[in-house]
Image (cartoon, rainbow, N blue to C red):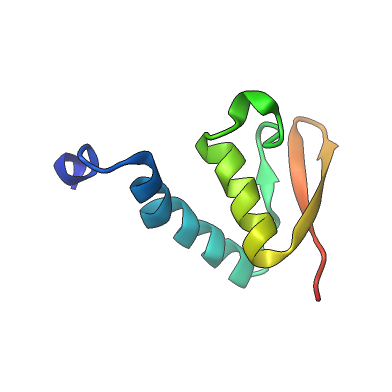
Length: 78
């Protein structure tokens, strides 16, 4: 699998690994917690930024709040 993954783009890897993990977490009602602020401009285009964008676009997450060393996603249910 590692050999296959090394030939994949960052977008392909995000689609293969990150999206399903996020989908599972949301479906299970888990708390979305980040170790770093995913809105930090230094993460733009990186997985952390893309995870936050995905959660906003697909699941309606709107805000983050920080507590201690973590950032938590707030979902606005429709």
